[in-house]
Image (cartoon, rainbow, N blue to C red; front, side, top):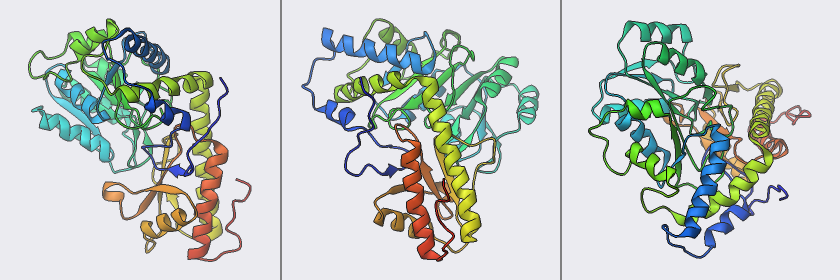
Length: 379
């Protein structure tokens, strides 16, 4: 099939999730309804399994839930081995992971660093060696700040003390490198609406056999009992009634995803992130505005960039100006709400598309503080 980025008329949607969705993917949702225990749906389900296994880099069954990713985040806690939780917190969604663990009755220790930073692995190792933890929670790509954590190293550190590691890769998956089997990961979950570029409403996870066999037996609930979900997936069907139109969309989108290739998608997302970082640097110089990227260099997500604005420049002013030029960006999140904007360069977006978006932002900044030098500068 020919891979064409055909978007709806407002094909300028750079929110860090939900992201832009192809017309072909959206139109697939209008297909006729089928029974979820029929042979037709079984074929649909098995195609989804096969495609997602390639993206996760696993031979394990892929768990597909009709829920937001929060559902499989809670499932991580309810199905993990019993014991204390060490939550690595560096932004809004890693804090959410810690809060959910506490809400599920777990004893949680938070290892917190300032929003936008990433944890020092030596300090994480020391913390793990000093405590008795059954579970470590960590966010791969922190959507609130655009910080990227080396989850392979965190997982390895957890394993050295006999703990398991649950990884939120909601805005990382398909955009940032992740190899479930090769990295010997325990549990990774994501959502349909980020770099997979499927409408919201599906969540996906992979759990290792060791994670499942060591999990707690009580308090897992019913809807997100991972052992039951794995058994159902292995037999070629969902555990519960699925959102069939979203499976149609996933089926079409996986064709595009596999045609591009997983590693090619990682490279494309990295290129979009580099372009954005270069633009921020040039815009800062040209405008004489105190613009900066929240996440430190070397630890930036390939799917989302949080840009800190100068004091006195309200994010809403920039967002409205960009919207007037036909583009939609994300506002800041949590404690960064009043000081940042977020650019979601994920899913099926391209370097050229991101460049057009950034030129719209540059035009807004020229209006706010006129400067003939504030151009795209070849970026």
